[in-house]
Image (cartoon, rainbow, N blue to C red; front, side, top):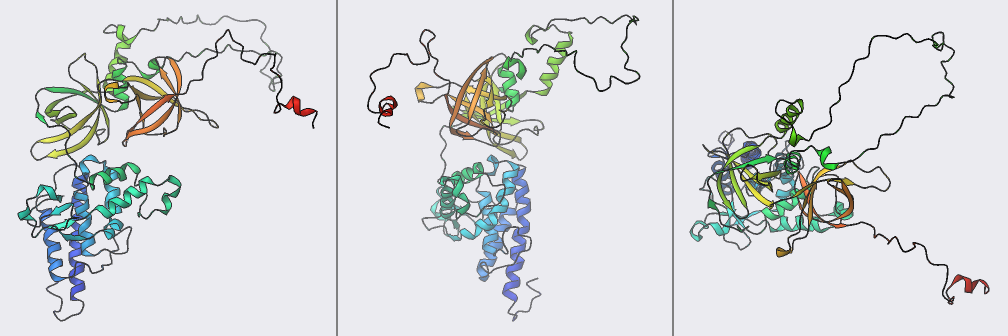
Length: 487
């Protein structure tokens, strides 16, 4: 298109900018899709993106405004802004995000790209570096030698990170006035992740060690709760005793259909067919079910609902594992999902979370697992409301306090409806007690982890009266009885 445009035309520069901007935008589609699938980016894609921007920069058209009708949240994007979108997406740690959050990020980067600019890699504010000769995304500047910074491009993400942190620190009622442009669907969890990903360089706490053997894994709160409870269903864990209500019959109630032709009272009863006898068998615990019993099939069906997977260990550290999926990955597996780990059959289940997922070329799928706690107690959690009916019991996990590292007791809950300050009722093996959820320690798209404190009322000893004694001390000046005569 650029070659066919007249050389002396005043529109040649604009046509050049439009052509390069459209080419960069078209390459964003495969990049977003590869990020959502956690698979490697097609070879040559990053190299082509770098070359297109270099071409526009050399012609001096990289900052010309280009009207883009396909942009959802801005009227237009320059070549530089269009180039910043894949660059920011490439250094956002998308393998730690869910697919819907990756899609929201790709959209909100349209207005956010106007807050940043590309600069020289040698400037001190350049946290990320893109080398045009390398077919890869931006990386931290500290990972490159000084010899490669001469022709490299730098990105200073600090202005955008400061706006994100300013938004997160504001009260919820004042966030509508924040300077950070947002779109529908951008959650606080996503903003916290981006603040960390685009902030200072993250250093690994523990060194990895090559691993051998396998781990047994279950996915999701329901499965983990089931196995922690000894393969018992949720209603058995709650042990709620519902007293049956005795039926009440009212003989004197007037019937509106008493005068119907077929409503005559029967005086002589003709015996009909013999009644079928119902055989009743007492309930047996699933742990005592014999093979072949009908209840054994129900227990087998529950196991099918909560499958387990034996996965080989790629490497490990005191903080978690890198596991490999040799077969097809379940659809439930996502970044931020709660999982359970078991070293050997019969041992206790540990609680962990999926931190990242990636597909390795010719190597299947790998995922990073971060340990949360070595053990937990399965329980039920009910949200108490003052004006509305309280919620049903939902699955939750109680994590004990660890005094050695000053970690308080916490509870892992579903993502909704629990919030900081919620009054809840905990059902642990049938015993109910009230509590208040305090600070939220962690949160993902699947669960939240709260500190909590007991909210049980103080019991008055039975040998002491609740009301005050009849004898009163001498009335003071502030007593109403002493003021009555003055009034």
